[in-house]
Image (tube, rainbow, N blue to C red; front, side):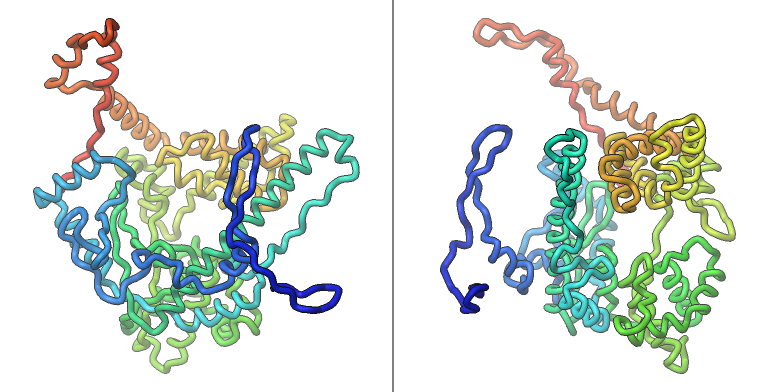
Length: 514
């Protein structure tokens, strides 16, 4: 259905929801099935309750207790206690450990997490819904229509090769960002529709583990370890009195969410008390007031905390106020903490807050400052790339690379992480982001190696152990490995090929729990 622009009449016609088209991929003509743009637009706006598979939703009753590798979680849909991709060995090891009773405490932990009841925060939901229906961009909620201008085609596009290349790169980035905006809009729509469906109900999030042993909620779209919007929409179903300690932590939590998380605890409490006027304005008039909460690092959680803190202070007895707001806490770069503890690395331990200090250390800022010093030296030497990034190396630029270095991030991965952050800054041109990120990735990885030399040494030792173990041949297989294979169709298989096939041992780490 559409309106004729000339006559103003409503015109109707039937169109297929899907249609066939062709596109060229590497010089080959391929047939593709495309979705009608009208249908795609409706899917982006309409409720998605019918399109969500039930197994991906929270539960209205407590999950089944975990009794085995595939016995627990949802009542009728099979759920796995551990996530892995097409790896029969991992499944076999888990089944063996489970049969010996060595993972009973793990199952018990998953049961506790899964049996914790949650509610939707109605006040936050109402604000989110207003922003969503307005179609504007606010606090990580993408707009209905992508609001960034398309790059203009330069006048010398056909005559200047460099200009043509630059324009093509910018147009590609614009197209990708526009597609990402639509994807983000769909993701937010999922969260809103799930929240709407569970308004007023207590619900549960069944959990399972990844291969490292970290517990995650099985419902992927709305959970308490999701993004800022997901966390802002959720609260505990069971409220408890704050008490003196709880009220203090509520203020510390608010300071952390706003971004003031590097001061001492007393300084964070003072930060909040000095801004009570802004906090009250945010809680009472979130969209009509000064919108102080929108400038926070985590705005939706900040707004939820503003509302809860105001309710506590206005209750007459803040210590007796019943609160059900989660206060999230996290370690400082947990992987580096483990390495620093394992290696007795005093310098590294101080940077990741394993040492007792008045205020928290910030390893990300420390690394950023180390890189900035290198950049200053290169600028003095006349390096053009260093001049591009000088003064633009913030904590946020290096944070993801520092966090993932203990998980074996490569130079290519680090470059992509830094390139994304440089693009988000917006003060480096598209065509310069690649070379700038390459330069920074090399220096960031070098600084991390210098700062956490103990961690790097342990990581290299573990890599060497894994390499030797995976290339070893068990004693009971050695005789079979060196025995010549029977010739096939007159061909004799070289012994080295047979040995190479046997050199595929799995590295198995057995914890003290078995």
